[in-house]
Every structure is written in structure tokens, then in C-alpha cells.
Image (cartoon, rainbow, N blue to C red):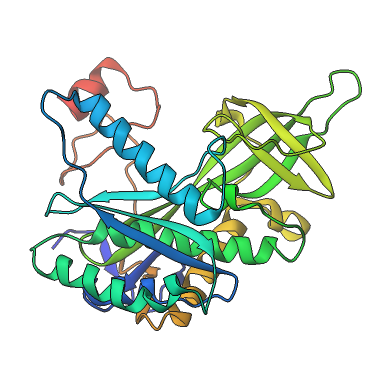
Length: 329
């Protein structure tokens, strides 16, 4: 027993960015593929791409993406100039499966064969002892994009070429566009989703910062350097990314500023995630944090000899040469 360690029985419970999925991975994937929206659906295709003799790896993977993009464009009714995004995964059978958001078409031939295609895909996944966490990660990422698109459609239309693009949350002009420079600074959060092999979903918000300028119309081409913001009936185009380490997006703000902070955005994401999991019929439980023990005395003299092992996280604190030798050698 560690001295000076007291057990707690009624510590506050804090919400985290973690969710536990309570079914096996294959059942979860089956539920993730079932349509739940009248506006959008997750479509997919399984295809084997054979590497040709003497074909370089770079050329092989470029050919895969070229063929996948051609298929997605055809499904979304886009021309060859328009870029598209998708979730691409390699199966243990050396087949590739790719998922993408498409407009819902309840009575179309594609929709009528969806249940059969889902069953065929799951049979292939069952045949191999394969960790399906990356598939769950990609599919649920598309579901959250679907939720955002459904909300955005209430205010403005989103062309199909943007269905599968990166979405930024809680975008704010930290520096308004000025007449002198015709530029401003936009800050936002980029959502990253991780699914673990232990059936857990983790959500992370990364701060992003852009130099933006007004743009009257959206161009057809879309690539990783082209970012658009549609706010207050204005369209802004990102000219370039900026260093976000000095971001004005705080983790927490009180009262009227709460809606602009990271904690609020986490709550929005977690609420949307839990609501969509419930719609899909996927049993889940948010993973809270609750302290079980506390220490009521702290070491303030870093040069003293300690009775127990002390773990120190070096987060930029200046240590003397003696202290560094004592703690880190």
C-alpha cells in the first residue's frame, strides 16, 4: 500500500471522449451499413486490384485510387474534373473495399441490392480472423459526416463532390476580413476518430487555423489544399494553413463564450455520436472518468530523497543538473 494515498467513494464523474461498443465487431459493421437517413447513404464496393508484372508499387497504388475515384464519380454523377474522397481498406483476401457517402435512393436497384451486398461483405470478413477496427473507424467517420451534412442541408446545399471531404467544426473568424488586405483568419476544429481493437471509439479535436479570403462561388476542383467555409451567407476560401499553436480557441470558456470552446465542441460531437449509435441500434456506453484515490500531500522540494518511486512528465519545466540526474538517469 502506498502511504499518503486515500481511497475515494464519491468523486465527481467527468465525461470523456471515449465510447465503449458492446457488440462484436462484425455485428457492429452490419449495423453501420444499414441505411438510417432519407438524404444520404453509405455505399461501398469490393474489388480485387491485381498488381501487374514489373509494375512499380507507386504506380500500382496510383492505379487503385484512379479506378476507385472513377467508380465514385460515376455513382455520384460527377465529371472527371471533380475530385472525390472515400474510405479505402485492404482486406486479408487482398481485395480492397471502399466506402463513400452518396445520396439516398430508396427505390433504386443499388439500394435494393444493398442488403445482399452487406451480407456478402460480412461473409468475407467472417472467413478471416481479421481485426475490423479500422473498418468500424472509417464507417463511423462517414456516419458523423452524414450527421453534419444533414444539419448543413437545413441552411445551404452541399454538392456531391464535397460529401466525403474533411469537415471542420465550430469555425470562427478570429480576425475578420479587412478591406485593406482582403484576408482574415479562420480557426476551427478538425475531428479525428479512432476505433481500437477493444471495441472503443475515441474522438479527438485538432485545432486548425487558415488565412482566408472571400470567394463568390465554389469551384469544381477539390484537393487537400482547398478548404471552404460557408458562414453567415458568405463563402470564404482558405489561402493557406497557418500555425495553430497560438490558436485563440480555448479548451474551456465560461458563460457566453462556452459555445466557442473545445469542451463545447466535444459535447456536440459526443451527443451526435451517441445519438447516431442509438439510431443504428448499436449498444454502447460512454466511458466516464472518476478518480478512485487521492494524495493529500505533495512533494515540493525536488532535491529531497523520496520514499516511493516518482514518475515525472517533462512538460517543459526547467530542472537543474542535479535534479535531471536524479529524476531522469
